[in-house]
Length: 136
Ligand SMILES: CC(C)(COP(=O)(O)OP(=O)(O)OC[C@H]1O[C@@H](n2cnc3c(N)ncnc32)[C@H](O)[C@@H]1OP(=O)(O)O)[C@@H](O)C(=O)NCCC(=O)NCCS
Image 1: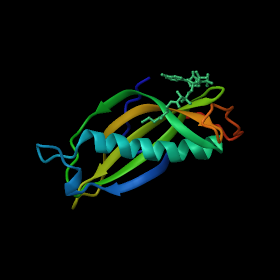
Image 2: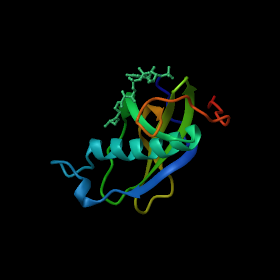
Image 3: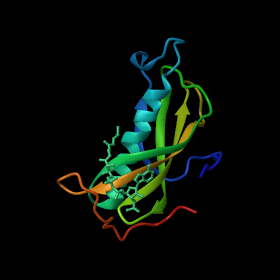
Image 4: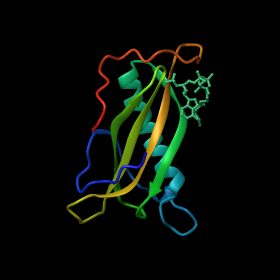
């Protein structure tokens, strides 16, 4: 499922970080893989909070890279829970960038990340949370 980003970010802020020179690709822009990994980390924090357990990423779908990110941009990732299965849950993640000297952030990437709740042996276990409000 692909959700189009709105004018304002929605959901839980799960990570905020600054794009640094070390995160650039050969063009001097921020590397897409860096952005994806920030989203994965933030989504994992959110998923673990919802599942009340460790989680692992099992799938990433419907990734959209909408705008380039540059060094110095403040990148914030927002999470919305879109599906809870037996052991897995899917989180829609949106990354927004705030450029130096600008007032309003804008959406740069979004995608659906699926995490699996795991036990201490790394085996899937049921999502235990009762706090599983699905975003509309
Ligand atoms: C995630 C993992 C524990 C699942 O183990 P498994 O034996 O395949 O477990 P299952 O087949 O029972 O699947 C578990 C859940 O994942 C879901 N799932 C599995 N593959 C999926 C996929 N490609 N896309 C979406 N969901 C998927 C299943 O539907 C199931 O969800 P449900 O219980 O809510 O119905 C195992 O595949 C694993 O350890 N993968 C590596 C995870 C990892 O290292 N991630 C970091 C990558 S860099």
